[in-house]
Amino acid sequence: MDVIDVPRPSTKAINQDRAANALIMAQVSHLQRAERRLPLKYRTEIYTHAIQTEGEAAEYIREVTEAIHKAHADVTKRRSRRGLEIAAAAERPKRKSAVKRKRKSSKPTKSKKKK
Amino acid sequence: MPAGLDQLKHIVVLMMENRSFDHMLGSLKAVDPRIDGISNQLSNPDTTGAQIKAQPLADFQGQLDPDPDHHFPAVDLQIFGGDTSAGRVANMQGFVKSYFNQRGDVGHSQKIMYYFPQAKLPVLTKLALEFAVFNRWFASIPGPTICNRAFAHYGTSFGRVDMNPFDVIEPIKSIYTRLINAKHTAKIYYYDTTSSTMEVVNLLQNQPQLFGTFKQFKGDCNKGLLPEYSFIEPNYNDHDTDSGEEVANDQHPDHDVQAGEALIAEVYMQIRKNPKLWPNTALLVLYDEHGGIYDHVVPPTCAPDKFSASANSTGTGMEFKFDRLGVRVPAILISPWIPPNTVVDRVFDHASIPATLTKFFQIGGAAQSPREINADVFIEPNAGTVDAKRNLLSLDTMRNDCPVFNL
Image (tube, rainbow over all chains, first blue to last red; front, side, top):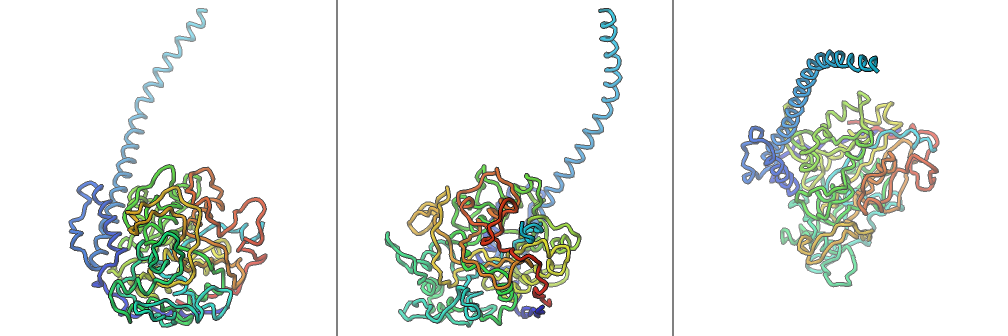
């Protein structure tokens, strides 16, 4: 079995001030479109037209990605809280209706007897 | 049922960025002539008319700046050499001319012909020689990233040949939705939230629960929680993290190619070192498109998609019916059930990914694009009679000689 050493990139490989390539700028523009659909409170205050470098793009990409996740998580939380409230509300009248049903159910029995 | 297919539970796809087959794996022709790589005769004319040969002078970083153009019109020039006549024939003679258009520098434009010698890419070349390397895996479209990646997720780009956001046109759904609807598991692992995904508008916006990070991928491997299908995205940008700076490892020019080598090795080792995953996981490592870098194989025609791109949107003055493939990219299928030195000559493109998953996990019924329906599969369906000639996971017993990378 061969064991192969994997060389690491040079420390000079990283450059956050490098001009963002067309792919990264396209990603920024896609995220901007997604950001516009978010409620205002989740939106960033980053001016995307001024983004030029990878580091600047990265900051925007992170903020919007996290905001999208947070917006969905908040909705899920609200939904499950609402679900619990509905379930709790449904529990209470259930007992009452069960009692009612019991009372109601006694009537047909009587009527059956009449028949 | 062959043992390798019978045991297969997980399919993992790692899609890197913007490098052609010849650029990354072309040197391997000298090692194994069955691999359709670089030969001495291959050249392209520069703008002075001089023939520029492909040379093993590629460097990890600094050579391909500016990023070589790989939008639809530029790729058209690269493939057809500038011929726009009706009866034109593809000749792969326009790469140097195309790169010259960006800087107007004859010497610099010749660098588009450079390829990596084997020794410079110890990870990718080792995997290609140890497992199954595809001689004919092409980008889905002769164009840029977003529309090509769309083919891996949806089996179509819904008529797009550019980088703009696209709308999913029902009834076609992503392969993730299709798998989950059929009670299977699937996840997209982006590197981290600062790199995020290239499938922003549709999947991240509407189904963020499909996503995890690369750290979570490693955790899921260790905890036995790896989904049946995982799609891994590399780190697309240099950025800060809590523990220091993170270097882009997508290999997109002008990002460092060695950083991508380390990522490929890390994904491989995450599966390789786990005895509960290694026997039942297949890993496909491939590139989304060629990034404007030279390759010598003429992309073939294919069955057209039901969508088309207008003459205006292609930027070439010609309509595109999605009836031919993009430039060839490196693609390697890895599993301990694959014999070493397997070379595959059948034609594939990224629509082969959802096509393979649909057939392997038997999730028929959902709508597929014509391109996906006609795409070949790289893993045979785990049902009925298996054609031994097509099955790449063909060994009766699992290999115990697979390489190990020291990270």
